[in-house]
Length: 490
Image (cartoon, rainbow, N blue to C red; front, side):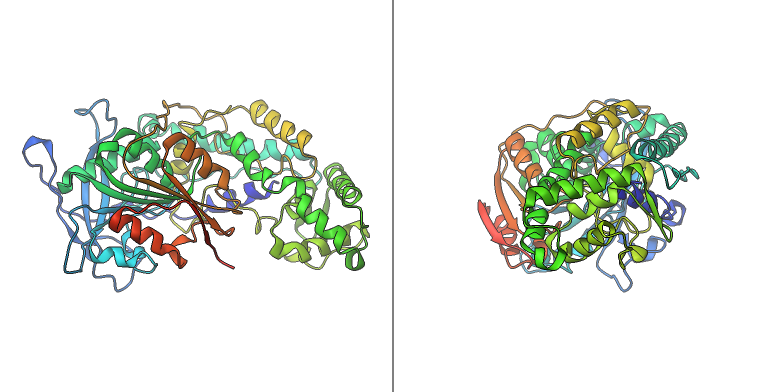
């Protein structure tokens, strides 16, 4: 099974937080259709509030249209939060903080700001958070994953991919059928509209916006729809402006460049690994191993060793090259590498664009946010054909990612195109990361404009913990933008 798929199936087993425990008073409406928010300490009204000892975060309920094209139709309730500025001078422009996702609760994210280098902003800005529709304490659909079925240990690449495709397709059909109207409205554009409803309820004429990871999709949508309401916006570890899973998988695979850097390293270390000093010959030998293990997978303990296992090691980061080399040489010499018995097959591979999910992931919202506006095919022949084309163009690591989340996705929404705006926009990307590749930051800048700061590391969303977080503070304090680079985590 492709490693990225194994990670996703583990997250699908996460237990959702129950909505019924959140006991807010009803928010009353005021004239002109603007809702008044009734604020209460989150720790006193939210069941299982995740921040022990938190006394600063306030929570409220916000009522919004399910479908913004039908403002007088069905309505849904969202959980929103804030931390009030505690400095002597309060900026009238609040800062919305988007902590990522999809499928994850964000209502506790304002308090997380206080744990990072962004904390100085909380002295003069109210920090805002939201549980997106379909997540956390907001209205959502509960739907458990099906049992699914794994392919046999001896299955080839197509059968492995088909097994996870079928599992995801069954989940999508069954869960969307619970409320197709609701699921169809789970989009980054509607998250943007919900944020603007939040802004109006606060009586703010503009907002600042700091978003990381998947929250950048909502940020780009917000600026495209409400550019005149953006005071300043910073987007870090950015999603691409167009969602197409097969293309995004290919972008991540391309980061490994066929494992060329690792293969050159192996050739330079022939004295240790004895694979030869000719990098082309080493690469050919390892490519042949991948093909062999696809034809005849091996079972070591409970771990299936197949061609995806080889591709995973060829595309590994420099910090794991020694262990990857030991594993590969062990197989080439007919032995069993020591690390295999402890290898889950997923530790080094992560789904793009997304941080590791804590308990509380809503798998249906996860899929809907990705798939409602996805421009790729949803049939197995489409996905498998794209994977095979990538493998043909890059035999070493091509086709090592397979994202089946949109398998036979039964509803479709119109994507909101990302457009250029006039409001101040700063983008940051991490040069070597493989969750949201730097290429996506460049694509976002091309579509939306703004300035691009490149962080010289491979760590997703590391900026708030770096010295150059000072650039974020300067941007929100005085609008100073940054091109060029800054040091990352070592």
